Image (tube, rainbow, N blue to C red; front, top):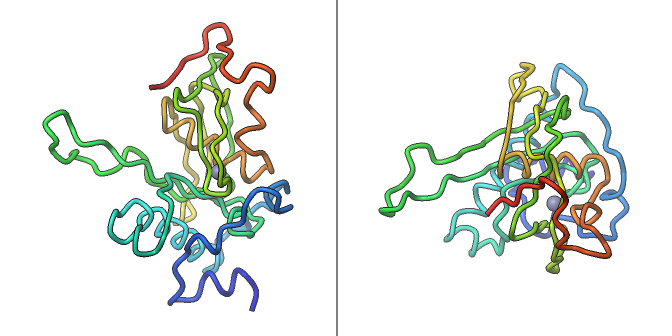
Amino acid sequence: MSIIQKITRPSHQIDMQDIIREGHPTLRTVAEEVAFPLSDEDIILGEKMMQFLKNSQDPVLGEKMGLRAGVGLAAPQINISRRIIAVLVPNLPDEDGQAPKEAYSLQEIMYNPKIVSHSVQEAALAEGEGCLSVDRAVEGYVVRHSRITVEYVDKTGQKQRLKLKGYNAIVVQHEIDHINGIMFYDRINQTEPFAIKDGMLIIE
Ligand SMILES: [Zn+2]
């Protein structure tokens, strides 16, 4: 059975065993464009990836399944070299501990996502970045665009265009990097990991 057949079986739930780790050649490969209309296989794959993110963020289920919590997953990370990403960024509870009105600030399965424009300003997360395919902490600012416009096709086959900034923009850039064979630490200054370039925004 191929990997895609295994992953898209109705009973299968993606877990950490499905995720390949750094050193695997697929993570350094430019992934193939998805064809339209979307195949059932590609639609189910996207849904499985999104379900993984939901499961990983659920404290009880996540622990039961042994998942590391994630906000994004790209198909190459499950060794499927296709241009598909899923992103799921939860909103935090407000200051009184009340649940946010909208559970997520970004929830999307993107087919053939492409950054069509971006700010000159750069940005990095204060805490650095992590990756489900990297089982170690890598410190340093991951230098990215502060704002992006991304075009993609959604799961219904509709072309979409989205402007993103802040944390959401970072997450989408991290995942799009995966479909281009780029790892987050490629974007850390090797000699000065915490160097702040002129005008670079540090996102707390
Ligand atoms: Zn990653």
